[in-house]
Image (tube, rainbow, N blue to C red; front, side, top):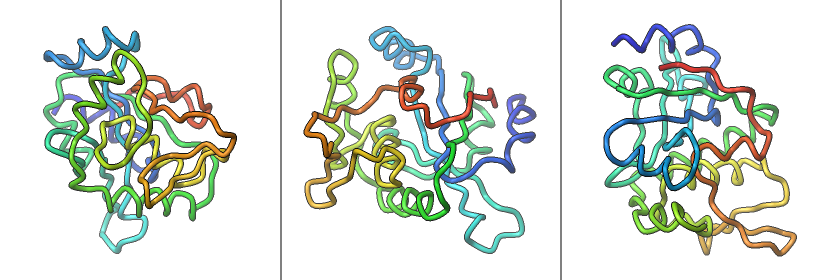
Length: 191
């Protein structure tokens, strides 16, 4: 519970579409960081359901890819016993409709199976962004595309793939690589 005092000062500023990036201990986190060369090994998307649903206080959730698949969990509950570090990055710009598209897509993905093969392959090479199975940064990336935050990309619902209108291949980013898109404010440590 020691980590929650860092979270509570920013809690009310968190919006749907914002990003959390995680640096975990254990076995898998350091291995992912070793292969990617990044200081973070997990990405999740914030979902602020209370902004739309009548709660006494807005609830802040994350949509994240874990075994066995995508799940929705309260941020505060996830942080309570977390032994690593977490950074919140506010998604700049956009309209409420863009964030609504991200949220609707994300909520429909809850239960989609985890993409172990994509995760392993993405550690050493690159994989195409495909929503048939999802790993963490792939899920967040596709949500950004669905929301319209990366204008030259669009999501094809039928094939479940991200398409680049310029004809280039589309590869899912790794945790720690979202700064390339310049879509977020500087990260704030919340755990």
